[in-house]
Image (cartoon, rainbow, N blue to C red):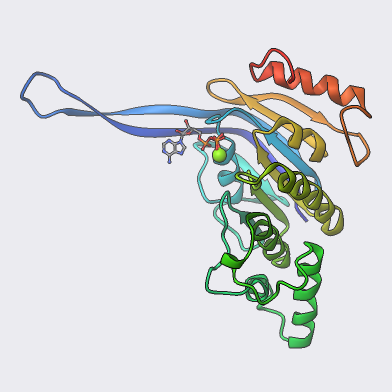
Length: 265
Ligand SMILES: Nc1ncnc2c1ncn2[C@@H]1O[C@H](COP(=O)(O)OP(=O)(O)OP(=O)(O)O)[C@@H](O)[C@H]1O
Ligand SMILES: [Mg+2]
């Protein structure tokens, strides 16, 4: 369960601005309306991994926040499994841009947070073990977040998010700040976890390669206000790479161009 329909979505922010009418007088105030997103119509299937791509400031996080119910659209509608989104729901969960682990809890306790409603303690321990092993953190159950590397913290965070069994998983630039190799590994792990849990994942990134290697579909936002500039289903079998699939390489160049970079480097 994680079918999402977005119709005619528009988002405007109203910012307070001040200006002086004459020297010495109190500054007057006016409201400046900034339209961030306009005319967004999208549909995501249950279990799909969708990469949402676009330049910095184009409204990717805003779109995710609105779908998750943390922010309100100015107009338009969002439905998840036919239900209008009116606010945050425990059936959806966010993986934040930065580590959201509770620092005073061990990995085991953090992952267990999402499983609190399981009454059978033995079953709960079994599940915690399963998720910790899924992200390859076996042996680190009793470590606190500060005792883990950045990559391990992200993995623990992912285990915590999937333990909560959400219908939709929101990932907003989850690999920011990771070194190259950890980034590559996290990419692969996220794809594996998606294959395993089969839930809808909305993955926001400004990394074109992440978007193309990971997504079942890619949505590119851009313009002022942002609209959907491109939407493509990626039928390429995994593991993917650009040399194996020249069509994917071509699409990569097209996206680079669309984002204002004349050639892929
Ligand atoms: N609460 C707010 N009030 C006013 N303007 C906002 C607010 N939140 C976001 N904005 C504006 O909306 C635009 C889109 O912001 P958003 O954070 O969604 O971009 P983004 O695509 O996620 O960027 P990045 O890739 O840098 O994370 C920006 O111009 C930002 O200044
Ligand atoms: Mg953002």
